[in-house]
Length: 169
Image 1: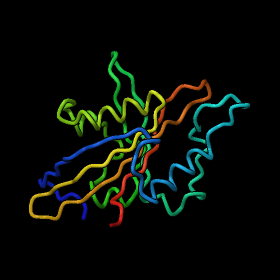
Image 2 (image 1 turned 135 degrees about the horizontal axis):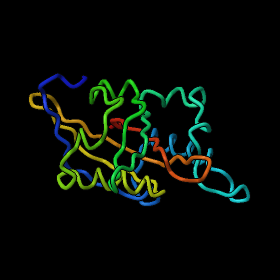
Image 3 (image 1 turned 120 degrees about the horizontal axis):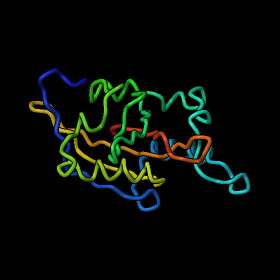
Image 4 (image 1 turned 45 degrees about the vertical axis):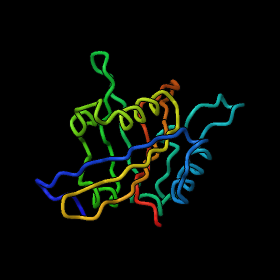
């Protein structure tokens, strides 16, 4: 089901919620439970997990749906570069590894909900987005995207980790 070259995919019906308010699929809840389990305890300073805290062998079932991005600050503008994209995401959307969000969605106003989710995750908020993916001549697909921050040794959010999938039902 990977994106066919020349075949454009549209994203519509985007809605986003903070984690506490969101309808979340079972796979999304599994991802968030893992991420929360990796958050440092308040007595250890709190904050968010670091990239080194994420152990692929602990989340084998989730790996095909996981993606990671670097938070990139250049000239006062924030962007996001895909570092890793799971195989199930690649099958649906095509390969994004190494690409920037601004390259994929240059019209920030047309994709306002998507961009806001990335910016807010970089500011330390966990967001859940639901949207519909459309291709010409193919069935549409309901999609859930969850983004969460990862911090560096100084406590700055320098990466994001997320899950993207088509929930069953």
